[in-house]
Length: 188
Image (tube, rainbow, N blue to C red):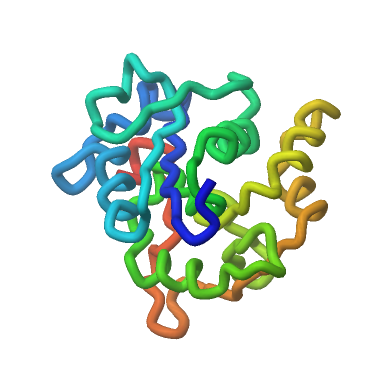
């Protein structure tokens, strides 16, 4: 395990009923959403993981790992990433947030310290747990939450030492669409 390195984690998500197909493979601005997320993270990390179906995403490039606990949502994907990451800290990014930028990734990294297990952006109380930093120490709590049948990220974050960063799109030179999430065809 490496205490000083960084892992980049892309959560692929899989097939979306609202999109009618696998969201990660949808083209946006000339490349797939998953390829975009990989390229956003690549310059900021020492290792890169994709959490999703290896047969679907294996050609993307980095190591692709299937969810240990399929069907458990983002919490299950994050738990899988923390289990397999070589580095203690992981920057997690959902593939359907194409406007996350390098400044935001560096901002998260700057605020990650030994006193916090997670660093999560929020704007006036609305958090973005799928564009965040998680320390390996979250594994036991996240695993216990899933074992108890709880999959909500907010509940899991309440049980670890979480630092919430006020990042509001449109303020302090953050792009208006920083946390825009692509969920429907009209979002493209």
